[in-house]
Amino acid sequence: MRKEVSRPKEAVTNIKQGKFDFKDVLLIVGSPLIGIISSYLVPSILEIPYILAYPAILYLLLSPSDIHGKKNYQVAIQVLLKDRKIYHSVNPPREEETNEL
Image (cartoon, rainbow, N blue to C red; front, top):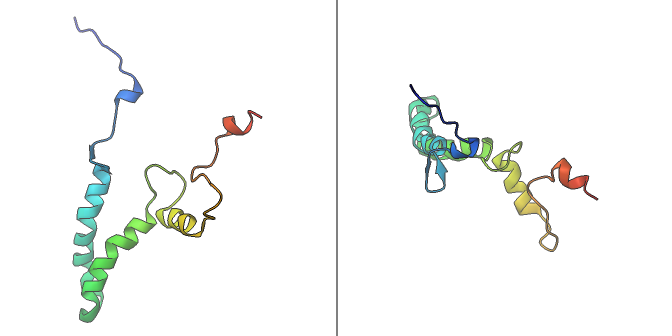
């Protein structure tokens, strides 16, 4: 007879290589390949800049894994335009924290 042991949800983690998720590694490897495959759509003089810009643009359009609901370009704009004298949280406060007062 088998005994089933339940495990907590915290025990299930994503596969990571350093600070990269497996999805990030696939993106880093796969996006230049997609750029090379689709490079026949652009003139030959622009092929190399197109292949180099494809992963960068794709990265900016993706959502970061630790800040949900925002895109990478939104986080970059917020970091570049923030007031250096005042601390602003990147993550919005949770409702539990705002109702404590």
